[in-house]
Image (tube, rainbow over all chains, first blue to last red; front, side, top):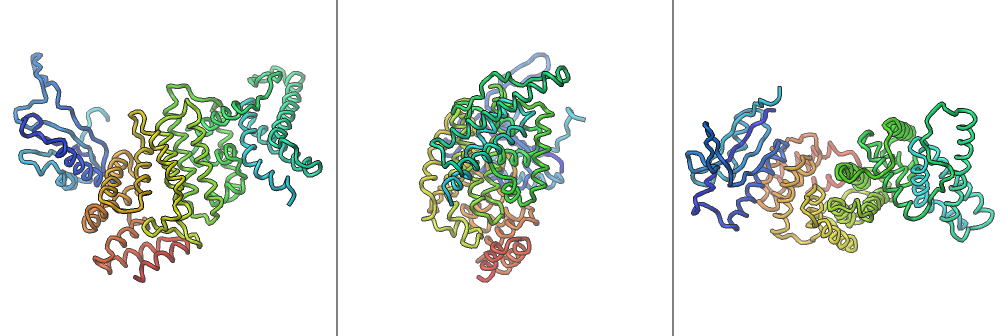
Length: 117
Length: 408
């Protein structure tokens, strides 16, 4: 089993795109059902959601208010899953409920740590 | 049977552990066996004396005085030995013999609590922790422990002997851990208490009285933690709530032959409402602070299960709690139970799709679950799974329960 990171990108900034508290509750339920299904297969290694506030650092001491990138979607959170192959990881990521939203994306990448030998 | 013959076993269960804890704390772990011997001898003397002279007015007090005298004699003999014979050969870290052995209620409680932390020390295995807890904190006989673990006296004796040796070797102190470490050490204690409870709740042993006693002892130990301000933490209350909720179904969950009756088929009039409301009280107490332990999640699930009637809210809440529990810590049981909740919330088809990803082909409950889910949708497949479950089942009573499913 290898570990894969599933990075979820959403539009966190455009006012009109933000869900109401009730919608948010529904989204979170779907999210936890998805992650719970992965965890029930013993393939969930961990994950975190990220706050909207942040800073982006660039060369030459340039620091801007984040979490902006050049597209309007920013990283909302990530989970780390265990899978035998990239294909299997993608299959699990395909049921991520944020993919129901227009413009959202999920990126799956194999983890190769630079911190451990 | 004469009066003393019925009261002594009862006193043994309640007083033996107190005497051992107090003496052992006084002597130090090095002389745990001596403490146990003195406590056992005390009961032997009581058996003889009370048989001849009748019951003393305060039997527990009588036992304490006798144990105290025996301990004093022992310490005196030892100090003569130390002074005259082996002086200088070894360090003597034992407390001064002039110091009174304190069998006050306060010291009894403190000693037992400290003993709990000492026994649930990470230096010894979980099995040994549970065994020692049963022996020293609950006053169980070796025979009973062997029955509970479905093994022999020799195995238990060896296991306890090695564990005591290890505790001495590691120089484990009989004391409450410092405040900074208490949460981490408490985690160990709670795990052992919960395993002790599960040993009683899920064991395949047919000895029902013993099984129930294991559960009650686990709840008693947890209550002791709650009664002490230093260990009265939210996660401790959550664990007690969880055990109360489970224990409330004790009489409803097995039939006369000892076979498990599934939740759906239980006679809910047999559920113990007193324990259910106690569970609710401790779950409320557990809600203080912002720490969420696995016991909070499990107690939440158990609390919903005490609601007899199905409702969409009930199963959605249970599914959500299982989702959180599994993200925190995987276990096959939680994975299977979550899938059952999926069936209740999203229907059998959705649950089958999830169940088939669980990959637990050796687990009989996995096949029972699939048998249940396929039932009515694809009876042929359902039967294949019930057959597999049957082949993985050991006890006759449980086999019979599966056969009833097959006939349908």
